[in-house]
Image: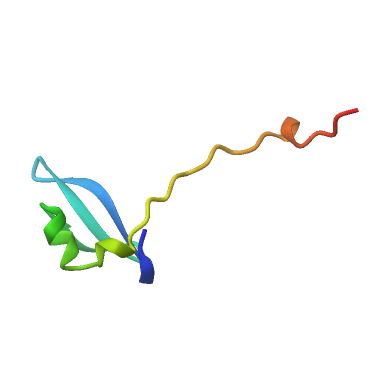
Length: 64
């Protein structure tokens, strides 16, 4: 995820894996290399978004 709503996701195009550049969910480009992605976004501004496991109700229960 990057600034201004950019994100990079893996995808397949004509049987080849590409890096899909999207902005606010709209496809901007399908890139075959990291260098091609760098033409659209500053790689230093990207960060990985890792979904965390959801907390279950019993973790929040009070201990007697």
